[in-house]
Structures are given as structure tokens and as C-alpha cells.
Amino acid sequence: MGFNPRIQLGILLLLLLSLYASANKTTVYEILTKYSLPKGLLPDSVKSYSLSKDGDFEIELEKPCYVEFEYLVYYAEKITGKLSIGSITDLDGIQVKRFFLWLNVNEIRVDLPSSGSIYFQVGIINKKLDMNQFETVHSCRDNALALCGGSLRQVLQLPDPVDDMPMLITE
Image (tube, rainbow, N blue to C red; front, side, top):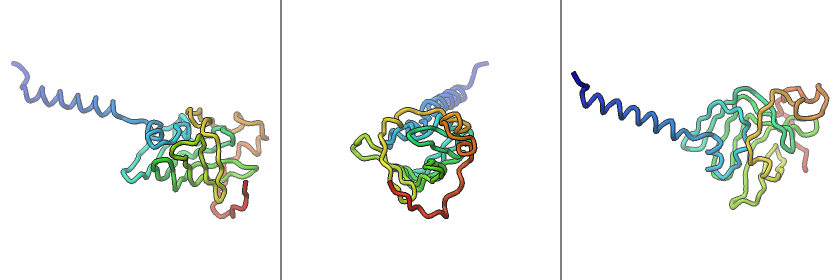
């Protein structure tokens, strides 16, 4: 007794669809480059992400962590924002340490065509950095002590919310 050709065709189609779906699973790092942003904006610990058609995204990391760029950066376990070509707006879940304060990064953008610079909006501060330091994906660290030589009290503290703090620092 042989298999029904319809059943064989159905099994073959399901197999092909599952292979196609797994082969076309784009990583969040590939999405960043498709939007003209450097893949190193996010650490290597991305567990999952979602991106809607209007650009709203949510990224889940394995756990909160730190990465050392020109400045120490804190990534919350959940990062949200709106992605468009050359920019991320309405960003939540990324903070940078300036002096002794943790400040929210609100927006990230690049020049199109690329000038080799990337801009970070932190409160009223607009900081221009060299994009080279964001070209590779960095390892995520559990604590900041492994990244810089500050005191244990200054470095290991989790960022404090700064929503109510006036932003008067300029560079």
C-alpha cells in the first residue's frame, strides 16, 4: 500500500515552507544595516525582536548589560523605539554614563549619504561620534566594573531614572 500523492505533496510543501521561513529569518543586526545604521548599536545578547511595518520595534536582551564605547552604555533587558532609514527615534532602554549621571539616549541618527559620523540625542545634548566604533557587535557585560576603572560604588550602580531631571549639560 503506497502513500497518497496528495499527502506526499502536502508534506513536501510543509517542509519547503519551514525551510524557507528559517532561511529567511533576518537578524536584528541585518535589519539595522538595511536601515543604514551600524550593526554595533546593539550588543551580542539579543534574544528576540519584533519590527512592525510602521517601524515600531521591541528588542529583548538575555539580560540587562553594559558595553564600553567612547562612553559607558547601559542596555535594559527591553529596548523599544521607532526605526526608519538612518534613524531610531522614541528610543527607550539605552542609557549612557556622563560624569556621574546615567542619561537616556532618546534618538540615534546618521547622515545619508554617510559622513562617517553618528549622532546621539541625550536630553537636549546632540553628541556626534565616529561611526567606526559601532561597526562591530560588542560583547555584553554583566557589570561595568569589568569595562572601566571607576570605583565599585560609581560603576556597578544601575542607572537611575532621569525623566524628571532638567537637561542643562551641553557639549
